[in-house]
Image (cartoon, rainbow, N blue to C red; front, side):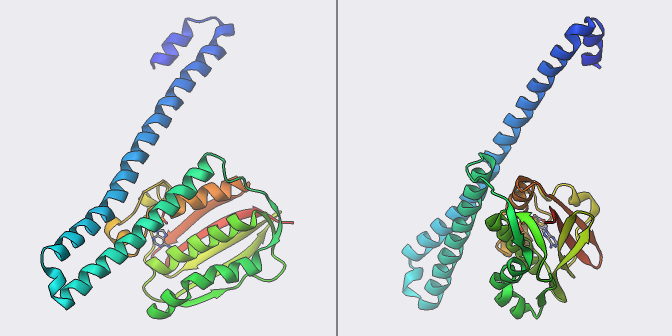
Length: 255
Ligand code: ADP
């Protein structure tokens, strides 16, 4: 309202200039707030495993080391939390490289089929342990314009999530042609995501259930990385979810 009143008193020539200036300030403020939130979130996420490692070490030093079974448990905690720190720092580095444009994406025609098959590999063991069927239905010759490394990371992250959050059933990668694009989807039979969370899950550190995400080894950064990579390739990403499961889709130009 204030802006409108202000503009109403300006000549038509000045209006455009003033409007641009006001927008810049708002955006700069928003960017600064986002940065602050991000640093606060990242510090909190990093501090959690560090505190757990320190507590385990202190417990070991104050006597638990003499009890072999207890010692084993605490050393396991140290190893698990160190893994977590390693995943977090890797994700933070990836995100910062992408956002600061240090990771320049180079798109070229690539066949998505082998990438889809490879993206399943890191999840094979976890899927087998849960009895999940894991398959790629992407046909050979699904040629998209993409950066190979980015495409691989996008599919790996989406499959990793699908397997992480699905208790039973299946996870599949599919491809469908839509006009001049290919839509590549990762479809699961998991719990689904409630509507009001859907528009926020691509935000950094946004989680539907923080406890469950951490327990499953999540960092809260996977989908933010995926979104940046897809957009960096000139593509689009989205999600549909219901009681029967979730479908994360990526639209990339067909070649
Ligand atoms: P995380 O490391 O927590 O998995 P992501 O950025 O990858 O972080 O995902 C954000 C949140 O979105 C997750 O914490 C989870 O709540 C939700 N989510 C992502 N993928 C799925 C899925 N396939 N099924 C259900 N929930 C999902």
